[in-house]
Length: 569
Image 1 (tube, one colour):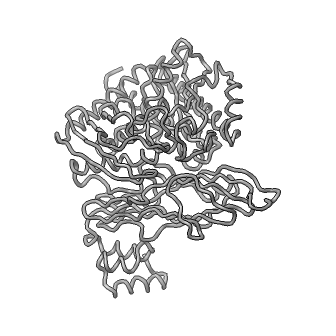
Image 2: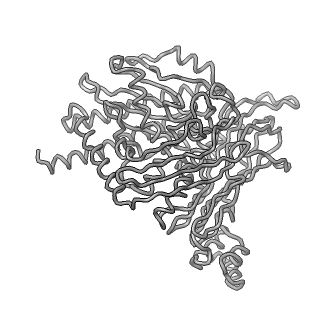
Image 3: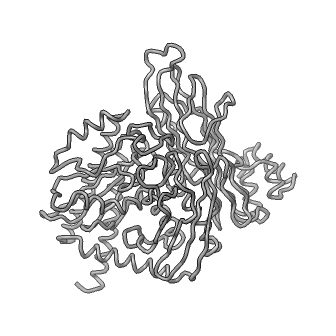
């Protein structure tokens, strides 16, 4: 085989490998029990060589899961040992420091054998709705309170599932069928990935993955280093203040382009929090690397080699380098803000490249519903755990508006009302875009959402809030305005906290306004046609169109008349 034809074959196999893990991820979406996976896509899937290096990741999934899981397989190899690996094995953990950051993420790794020899590993991660303990929220004081811990161990050996593990899990979680169903779904999707992988090997007459592994990693490493080498040798710092739990959190980062590497240090960042918003280093690396790759080498596929030149450091026992036994259940609330902190530094080094700040963290909440206790509940009242994923607006970009109700950086999808209401006695009375929430600018920030949530008759519930941007909305860039802040209250006017478990009596509702993304550039430079379009769609008010963007009263009246006639944009 000539060098050119060999390169073509390797490229075809590389693309095929990406297809393999994408099918693996889609199988998980179709078979998972938890709505967080099935509806929101909170998962990851990847294929690894014998040494545990990630070769390819699925497009479906989140950066936090995928980039964190890139490190996980090495831990599995170390804990299990090659001499204890057999065909039909399946390994499992939810270790926050050797998995993907908190106990609610189940990581499953399966060794892949071909013709009797170990050739690599398939791995996948999914967020499950309940893992016991206090439940999904920020209220725990240590990881021991946050749920059941599963060390790296065998879920199955030679195809035989560990029934003792199953019984322990079932006895410690609120939704046992859902949790165990997800375990089996994770194992099955790895098996599907394995089948497709060995089909590819048979087609290309391979006996191992050594050559294709070397091709993928070497080309990715070279391409990434070329991009870094083309950057100006420079340094900059970035920072941002976010809500925290009971007091604000400072994220600080020092960034340097250094020829063959990019260093990113979080020295000066706030220390550990007493509550569960701390971030294990594996998750900090995941999102810091994601931010850097988005800006520097977005089209180079994610794998061990393309991530290696990004060196991420943080002081031990800072909020972004929490060590055991720190509470970490809501590590995403802080972790999803890391890219905006990195972007604050990058904007000083790569002008006209970096978007304005967005909502950042997901706007998640979990409702723990039960029969009402103030009076006798109906006979058909039930207990249920309902987790729903929602999004604020993303920040405006240097050449485009931000996206409405879109999760960045996580990429997790907003869950449909119908799917949420199907999982328990919960009613979403209202869910719609939040007019005026996107920061003004030459390019406007994306809009957040309004939601109003209650329970069906006969039920009360605990509402676990997991929000941010209540006191520190998204900041505009290059003259753009800030996005709108998060608000949360009961329908009787009782204020509620942005984080933590709070009681909602029967008949009461929770009213939520999720944050908007910030604007980019001076609003006076916005195309008037885009201002008229926004006004017609209800994204901005008459006052904003006139006072911020400079439309005349006559222009505003013309747009409103066109809307009334049905002729608007």
